[in-house]
Every structure is written in structure tokens, then in C-alpha cells.
Length: 488
Picture (spheres, rainbow, N blue to C red):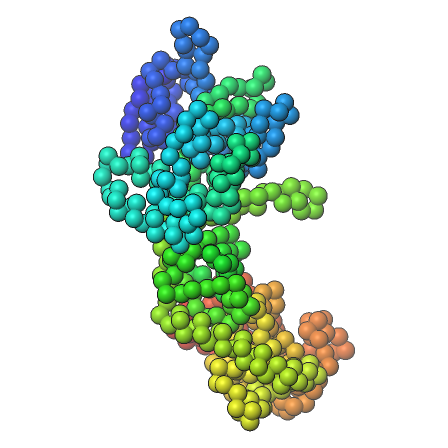
């Protein structure tokens, strides 16, 4: 290496042969002018550094952009645990990180020293709940402020919180403190830039790292809106997963002032309507899954606890009480609801008839006719958009049938189902009798000419964009979309 050229987002190493390598800024403080650099990938993402020493063997450093990091494995020679980090687009296949290197760098556990614990960095108790840890982290942020002199301490405190606020990583850390031979996890699964010290394998296909000098994960900041009912509630945290966007967010009670949940929320959470807005910084992680005889990497994005900001909607407390009330009402009137469900299995029942039964029994207004057959994974958006334009609607098994001005629509507001549109029947009772004796597959395949008899117009499959689904339904119905209705 002959020259270092600094830049705002990276720095360039100008080599003796005239070529240059762009590297991240954090890398520069570890380089010396006499170091020999060798590119191990065409894009410069993997660089081997050889540092010559006067009276000892050369020292080797490796900078690499790593991908997925495996779970800890025990070495065949009994030398402890190691993890394998993939190195994409490189002549080097993997970086093998020793368990001791992970213990020292991420968990601050050094066999030769007794440094302050991660709990000590946050000044938190070892028995602290996730909410207590967040309070401790916020206090440390205020104490350390934004002064440059405190940057290193602030980074250590943030790393401590991101490990302790993650239940699996906290369990790993506590186990490592009790037993130095416990397997250490690589936090959040890799995907970032790493600088390590070690040596190349004999064939040069892998790098054995016994020390981590620096690690910088790849971060993505996003603002997302999540349905509260998609969360899984535990005693001390809630886990929200969005399979479509491949997001996972762990929320502690400290982010929900005034809202106290418990395990019973999972029984009635599907009645919740509210969304929460989350500002988060995500790191990429993943796991290999065996599908059709092949191992494939399934990637996810996990939110860092230290960068979470949650905005709660107005009326969330009322929404919680409403959902809890519906669950209780269905239990209180289980016998009546059971009889209605049995009737709906045989024939269509108009919603006004069910409401009349509820009124005669003096049932609370929280309990609505659609709740009789509503399922946890039903999506209210589809039901509400179709109900807004109907003159009346019916229940039949798991379906809702809406009578519009020009068409009759059958809807199962559940992932994987389509919306079926029929021409408006002259005799709706005759239509319902014929419809109850057919299936959706009969209609789709026109068995016994049932599609023609029912006046089947077409079906609308649901994709990722709800407004497109609504526009397609309105087009089949011969109606125009209202701007506010589509984008509400």
C-alpha cells in the first residue's frame, strides 16, 4: 500500500501497481503504510492484509463483507466452538470465527480480564425486565449525551442493550458468564463488514479468525405500519412479524406507555383493529430451511432494539377494551352463537336476522353479526370495503355475500382466497338456494353449468396492493372508485 485517500463515505487505498481499493472509513485506523494488500474478490469486498514483523511470523488481517453466519459448531479437534460466516462473490468461501473471538468482541468476556459486564455498561440489574433495560438505556443516552469524547462508551452501551434486549442473545450471554465452554451466538446473524486477525487455510479457501478487530452490520432504516393483532404477546415482550416484508420486531412494554399486555391477549388479539407505526433500523439475518430436498436461505430483517420508535394511534385503549369485550361476549353467548353457526352451515342467513336475535337477547352492541363466523386471520379491510356499498349482506359458512346495486359478491376475507362476482339475480332467494348447493370450485370449473346458472361474472385475486384489488372489483361491478375510498 502506498497511499491512503480519505473520502466522506469510504477511503481509497492506492497500491504500488496503480490500482485502488475502496474501503469503509472504520478500516483506515487499522492499516499501516508498509502493509501488503491482496484483493480476494473482483469487487474489492474481500482484502487480505499481510503485516511483516521483524522477529516473528507475518501477521494476517482479513477484511470481508460477510453474509449469513451459522449457529455455533463444536470443533472436531476439541478446541471449542466456531461459527462459519459466508463470504459471497469472493475467492474465499468462508471466514471461520472462533468462539473465543466472539466472546471477547461482542460479549466482552475475556478469559484474561474481568471487564465490566453488559449489565454494568447499562447500570442495570441482572434481573431487569426488557422494560427496565430500555429505561436504563435511555438514562445512559442522556448521561453520555452527544459529546465526541463519549462516542466509544456510547457505542459499547448501545451494543450491550442490543444484546440484552434480545431474549435469545441475553440467554446466550448469561450462559457464557456461567460457563466459558457454552456455545456463543454471533449477534443477529451476520450480513456486514468485518475485520479479523488470523490465518488462511492451506488451500486458501477459508480464513481462520481468532480475533475480531471490527464489525459493522449492514443497516436499513425504515418506517413501517403494523397491525397490532399480528403480534405474538409474551409476558415481557411482543414479537411482531410481517412475512410479506420479511420483518421481525421485538417490542417491550417500555415502548407502550399505559398499555399492559399479558399472555391472554393472544386469545382475542384477532379482534384488534389498530395499527402502530414503527421507526426502526433493521439488520439482515436468516436461517437455512430444507425445502424439496434442498437447503435454501430464508432472509429476514430484524429491528435493533436501540433504534426503535413506536407511535401509538389515538383510541388504542378503546380498541383493546372492544376486542376484549367481543371475546367475552362470544363466550357468554356461546350457546346462541353455536346455534347460529349451525344454521349458517346449511343456508345463507341475512345479517339483519342475526342482529334481531341479538337484540331480543339483549346482547351488547359490541357483538356484531359478522363476529359469529369471523376467523383470526380474516382481514377487515376486504369486508368493510364491500359492506360500504351493499344494500344488504348474508352469512354462509366462512363467506360473506354482499348485494350491490348491479352485482352480488361472495367474499372470504382470508389470505389465499379470491373475490367472486355474480350478476345481480332477479330472485335473490332462488340464487341463494342454488349457491348453497354448489362450491367455489364448482363455480370456477362450471360443473353442471352452475357458473352460468348463477350468472358468474369473474373472480378477483388478491395481491400485495389492496387498492388494486378494490379497483378490479369495482370494474367488474361497473362502478367507479372514490379516491378517498381507495386510498383510505
